[in-house]
Image (cartoon, rainbow, N blue to C red; front, side):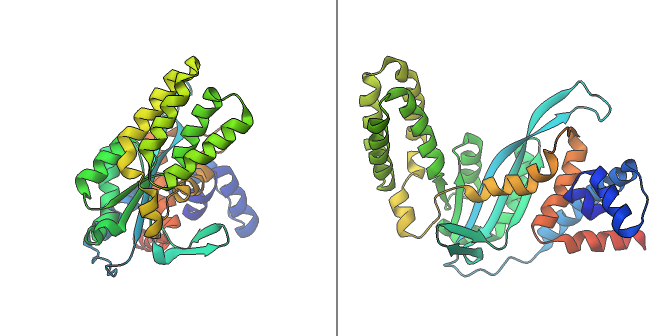
Length: 309
């Protein structure tokens, strides 16, 4: 019941139990059992992480930590149908260079650990730090990839000052493409301009890119506002845009792994048609989802056995 509760919606879970096992339960029963164990597993996982011995990684190992937010539809109370609002689930995905396999143009990550929290960034940071503190000795080989959110940058700089921070290259290019769409009407000229700027970014020349943006915006009044936003974004984050150095070190520069995590950890279960979540019940399911996706479902099994004994 608990496994199905974190995997799919309660109605489908009830159907599976009936068809495969001949077990008749209601959606309400399925909901209550899933949420009960989703609540109970949180302190067990937290205690296990705090008491675990540091993972023995060699000094040349690279550990990636990607974090970002994904929105789900919530309501203040379970019975209140009129208090819907979109709220952010913050997700961390941790994996090592040893877990990454390359196949042509695609990368496969075999093993990952996840943390997810619906609510403020302070509570999320505490969860993330329990996964990352045993990597602090890696220094610059602890690699953060993110989209430039200021709270993420502050947290990473304060807690892991020696780590490498990378601004997602593809996110950077998306911002630039959106600006070029406004600033350069001619399609061929726009395409050529973007190709040159992307090459400059990969060569770690953000200042040169900024100058080119300034020049283009002077010829297009409607682009001036967008140009300033883009320039501010690049200026604030240029220390995390040293893509030539990252490439020479063999590092990833895109945040595709965390985007996949949002689809698989959060959206697959929690953004199905018509779903609305209370904050507490959403977190209970997230607790179970991160256990399952992190390969720690045995912790849930052991917990259930203990409670059932």
